[in-house]
Amino acid sequence: MKRLLMSAAAALLLPGAALAVPQVFLVQNSGWMEPFFSDPSSQYKALVTEVMLAATEQGDAVVLASFNQSQPGAPSPKALLSERADGAQLRQHVAAALSPLGVAKKPGSGALADTDLGEAVSAAIGTALENKPGLVWLFTNNKNSPNNDQATAARNREFYELIHHGGAIRKALAFPLHMPVKGKTYSANGLMVYVFAIHGAGAAQLDALLRSGRLRQVITETPARLKPLDQDTVRLRPVRVENVPGVAFSTLPNGMLRADVDAGATAAAQGGSAPAARIGWQLENAIYPYTIVSAHLDAASALAGERKAIALGSDSVRALVPGKPQPLSSSLQLPVAQLPGKWSLAAVKAAGSAQLLPGRVEVRLSEQKLELSQAFRQRMAALFPGDPLPDIFTPPERIQGSRAVLPVEVRVNYGIAPLLAALGLVGALLALAAGLVIALTRGRKVRLVVEGEPRTIHTKPGMRTPIHDKAGNKVAELHTTLFASTLNDLREGAQVRLEK
Image 1 (cartoon, one colour):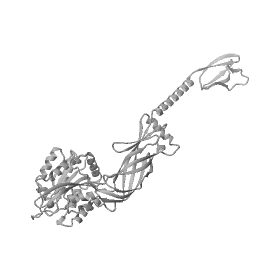
Image 2 (cartoon, helix red, strand yellow):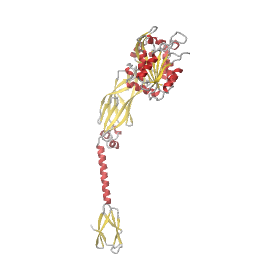
Image 3 (cartoon, one colour):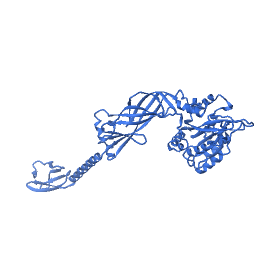
Image 4 (tube, rainbow, N blue to C red):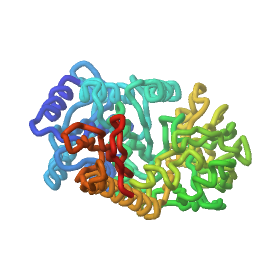
């Protein structure tokens, strides 16, 4: 394992590290693999090469290693290649590394080497990846027999425990492949390719790889899920929606459910109950190769910051088989009254467009009972005759429930009326303000009669002007406002009046 560690570290520490996590590819070459190496028609090495090319992108750190069972003087796994992927050059390097690889023998003996799957995976995680995120691929015929132990069921169970209870492994898939080979000593019908995603970043990269479709160009088989069995076990697909007044539903190409809400519906809902849409779903099993024998169902929606229970047509599911969806009816209450109204500030800001409010629908499965499908058992028995490996697919007893989430998008459509009304109101206020400014700054002529003599006073709103008699004595004060002028502080006996 020391050589593997040194080679892997060299690859991972190369300058210009890529964003993707490193990947380790483990190729079994123990005695049980003899026909995969000796049969001239064997596609074993070609499969390893093509999977590596499909799984990696330019600049990814990759480690290729053979494995059997570690013995004094014969460490396992043994690094064959450690570098950053570089397109066609990687194909050449992988082919060159695999070309001389043959069946391993025990040191100092002619006996063929034994196999330890758990040892190989543990070394890849702890030594090559140094317990950091990454992907570990395992190419094996599923003969897990350390020290030639014939209790393969027990050894497989140990391997299964590593997968399911190893905290570093976030996701594990298995691809059972038909690959008949016949050698001098043994023959085989099938090969298993495992991939283990280490930590969250590894799981994210594996999901991205599966979505890309690159791997499916090499392996067309549906992957069997080993882990996790308590996440995304079912999928919801809306197939029929009865619209409610002011709300129209549609399904986007990515499967998201969209509710288009007319802005007028929000105001109409203020004084009454929120509308409820009847939605028909297809409930699909997403954990091949398991059948959901039985489970209790409940659902809720989280929309516009409000969480509400969803009334389901049935509170249980039975015998949900992969590839055979079951119908499920529901009543989804929309929190329309809580959405911004037609004349709200949000409506003005979104005038002529739509305001998007993300949400989700959650379906929870509790008291869940899983069972490995009979079709998968039969396929495994045909590919690996006499091998009790299907037992390792037995779901752990502690897997009790899971959750499925369907993204929902509420889109409130606003016309330009709120914006036009707002602009009109602003215009009116500006006009009023302008009128006030003109009225306050415009000069006025006020006619008076002082001791029988007519006078004209020039003034403005807000001004206070003193009035004097012929002798120069102040006899009154003229106070002008926006609407009128008045005489104040009249001296006793003064002869002053406003002309009408």
